[in-house]
Image: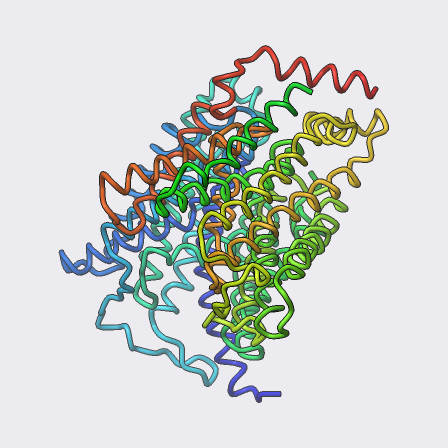
Amino acid sequence: MPDLAIIIPSVLNGLTTGALYALVALGLTLIYGVLHIINFAHGALLMLGLYAVYYLNTRFGLDPYVCLLIVPPAMFALGYALQRGIIGRAGHGRDENILLVTLGLSIVIENLALFFFKSDTRIIDTPYSFEVVQIIGAFVPEPKVFAFIGAFVTAGLLWALMSFTDLGRAIRALAKERKGATLVGINADHVYAMSFGLGIACLGVAACLLLPSYYVSPQVGQGFVLIAFTIVVLGGMGSFVGALIGGLFIGVVEALSGLFLGESLGQIGIFAIFIVVLIFRPTGLLGHKV
Amino acid sequence: MRTLIILAAVFAALGLVPFFVVSDVWLNIAIMVLYSALLGQAWNMLGGYGGQFSFGHAAFFGTGAYTVAVLQVQYGINPWIGLFAGGLAAVVVAAIIGYSTFRYGLKGSYFALVTLAFAEVLRILSNSVPITGAGVGLLIPLQVAPSNLQFADKGSYYWLVWAMALCAFAAACWIGNSRFGAQLMAVRDNEDAARALGVRAYSVKLRAIMLSGFFSGLGGVFYAQYFLYLDPHIAYGASVSIESLLVPIIGGIGTLFGPLLGAVVLHAISEVSRDLIGDVPGISLVLYGALLVVMVLFLPRGLAGLLIRRKAAPQNRKKQEAEHA
């Protein structure tokens, strides 16, 4: 049994990574909650966001946190266009078709990235990359602390948007009762695309917060896809609070199973949770019965 | 009966290919077409006839491939025995996945994601345990002899994969015309209605995934013996799962000849693109992905859907359902 001096930093590390996972999962759960579709291209789109931040930083010298003003809106537009132009048209009444189309999109995006950006793993250099903060005796890199705070701020903003704005009300109405919402004059296609865009904008935020303490390569999104799905099913499909708690939980599980089982086997913990939760409680720990 | 005659005629003609094609390059393409058709038909049994879309057929493929390879390399067991052991091991994995998902009524996207997660778990395991050679992979020693399931000429490999594909297509033909197949398709079209008519949906789906897993496992055995090398990424990576579902989706899911048509079209496209664009990494996958998007958007019934139009299929299905009512 390793003593607390090893476990505490590991848990803290897991919590900060988990907050980022939560941010990625927030977008996924928003899209699922409203459109009832599973976006398989989530990881590939995150990768695009990371490259956008990377090039804005290296070509134009923009700080990743300044990119928060540029990348999320751009990702929002991309998401809106994808939903309106491709994904929304592909369902034909079966949700597996959406899964297939988003799978196809992720293959296209990832391999185009491989073609244009090459397979090199890239990192950016910021003045604060190696700054640390001391928390209960453990050192945590500053960017991870920012990311942790940023994840909660984003979740709060999203919650406020859903609760207090007309768009939020329209989204919730549509999620509950499509026919009724359409009858009172909500443009379903537009609001669906807005929701999808918001979900993808979350990825833009995640990309800005992630890159200072992470790396980018064309395959980087693949690791996030199943993790984000795990968080979403764990927290309950469509639940924001569930995604936050699920994200933190998965982050800690990954860190601890990496500590006890070794790097290569560590990820098994996540998939085991995924399979067990999906089989025994597909509505998630906090979700409602369908 | 008519489909059986057409099937026999098509495979008889396919069996003659090595007599007419002498170039190893073309024979290799023909082998890869039949291999894709085999994987596609395996997926089609569960995904097409059964409506259960799997994203993790690599779990069966990789298990078949690793079984034959590990038995040979670590235990010196003859690959002809490994051939059947590989198929059976894949059936066991299929039974485990089927039991744990269908038992609890998992379907649609959830089923797809869980199969993917199973394949990932197997990939991580095969990457971590010494028996599979972990990340380094497993090299099957070159000992060319028919008794070793290794052949000097491509023609013999062609007949091997031809025989496997023949079995898979015959099984699919049986599904299309048997009581079991009618039950499977009834579950696909409306599970609640099928259950109300007395179809045991769980056991029907379980049998379908085991059958599907068996042929996917055979595909893995063929891969291992043909290329004589395996690593976790080849065996359990996403590309096998994607190829398995792409082939029938292009050709026409739930149709007997869809996977063959899809395999031909897929390889034709990738060969032509290689000629036109050159060997740029990832480009053929970009095409695969784009093809998947285009097919689902515009031709969700596949190319076969163009050929049979709307009249034949749905009516037949209704008739079959009525017969078993």
